[in-house]
Picture 1 (cartoon, rainbow, N blue to C red):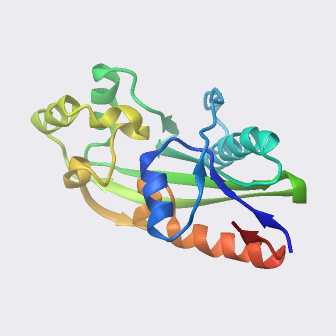
Picture 2: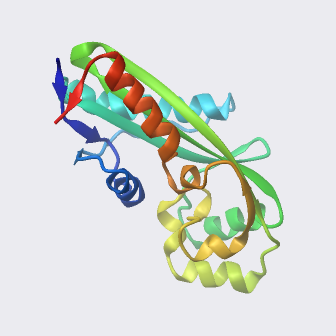
Length: 197
């Protein structure tokens, strides 16, 4: 029966918290891959490709470990919103989201090179923002919270007051759809008779 250490190829404190919350022991070894820009194809495929590339980068270095790579994107209309670079881009993104529906897609990939395992899954959540005032947007930007988050907001922080409804997994918006993730990881472990160490 093969044994493998679980590695999270992400520096996200939110993913680290969620994995810990559902009882996994793991090491954090963030991917340093430069993310290619969105080229206008399927957003879910884009997120899936990024998650797979991040996992593969770390899996190539640790072939006996089960590596998890993940990527979360925010999609509004035909546009994929990344992380804001400055106050102006954060303001623009939050203004775009104001009063509108958008999608949050998180893709996650499992890679275990020694066992030739390579899987990717994605989950989509619909999120609707209430109409935001300039004061609310500026207050949030001054908190500096938007700057490490796709779409310039984190549903688990102050910006939770911007969200009037969601359809789908809340934790997917935070950065990892824990129920879907846990189900697929357990299925993989059982299928390949792998024990996590």
